[in-house]
Image (cartoon, rainbow, N blue to C red; front, side, top):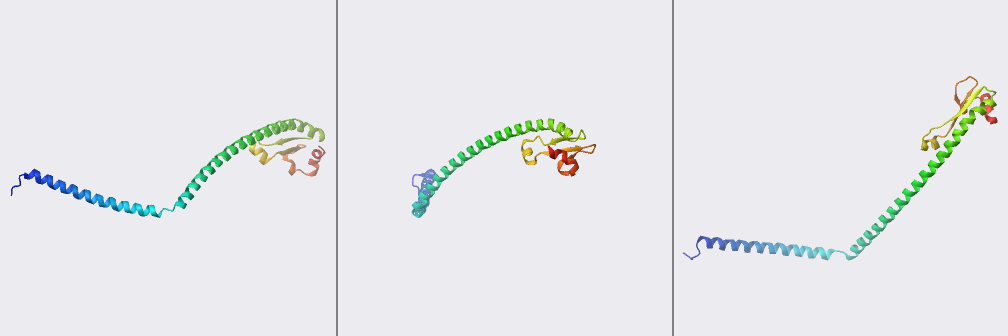
Length: 160
């Protein structure tokens, strides 16, 4: 039999059947996905969603508070650094004056037999941590810290 369609008609008929089969398969797959989605939606706990939203909102608030606290911390650190710098400048100035006069005073107290000075670091943060050392050169001896002097060599400075 000849049906009048020829080869072209047979190919078009088969293509239509293939498309129809594909549409049917995709429809079944879509229906299965819709059923799975319905099951998932039914399993969603509305209270848990509300709790999650509340936690997310609180998290945003806490982040804002943290940002404010960090800004305040930065401001306090700037103020502290300013005070440390001011304190350092005052102490450095005082130590310069002391060193200028200390040698003169120690020589006077020791009968021109020695010398003295304060040693310290010029690093701001280390100065307050390490402190100041009083150094003495009694008579013609070598320089020593005040803490290592014997009583007779420390005596003139104790009067000071």
